[in-house]
Length: 130
Image 1 (cartoon, rainbow, N blue to C red):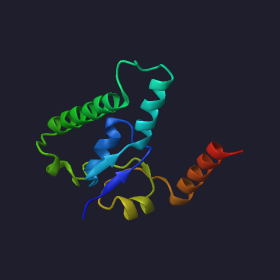
Image 2 (image 1 turned 30 degrees about the vertical axis):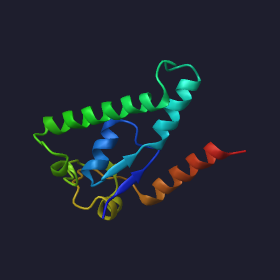
Image 3 (image 1 turned 180 degrees about the vertical axis):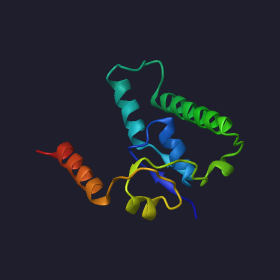
């Protein structure tokens, strides 16, 4: 079974590395696609490149960055990196780690599901308020 991640929050190389390390087989960062399209239409990005080329450049940059991170860790294949859980959790409570990131070390506590839910609802309300 494959784990496909469709998210608007993954934007940076580190985000992609974490998702891959926790077992993602594919990542669809839809917000990046929308953002690059909007940046082109607003004139921030050059009109010389179409949306497909801009996003292709982004994908290539992510692939090169992930390969560089893996190489620094002495990992030569994505299969060895995928699911390796080589990160340490910072700022997450034990309840979140036990449920979502089992086996991940953490020397400090942090946010709980209740607090995470409140932040998510507050952000949603702020974004879509009339």
